Image 1 (spheres, one colour):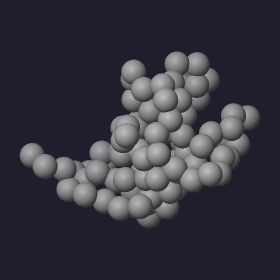
Image 2 (cartoon, helix red, strand yellow; image 1 turned 90 degrees about the vertical axis):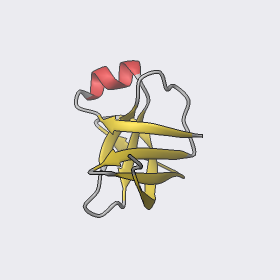
Image 3 (tube, helix red, strand yellow; image 1 turned 135 degrees about the horizontal axis):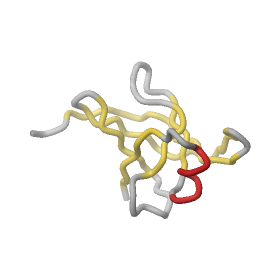
Length: 85
């Protein structure tokens, strides 16, 4: 299952309502703390982020990181695809 993610601006609010994840490895692409989009509560093996006309794909690792006192799962960049119009 692939879920979509968006930047998490208010960590406390995002954590109270949704699942937070940490993205890394996309070079100039999206990185850092993200929250899974509305309605998504279960963690996925993959996360997809729309970024400047492309979908950036991340795969879950077995690692977690502490961000602002919260343990969040780590996802690493795996590949990019064009968004079909």
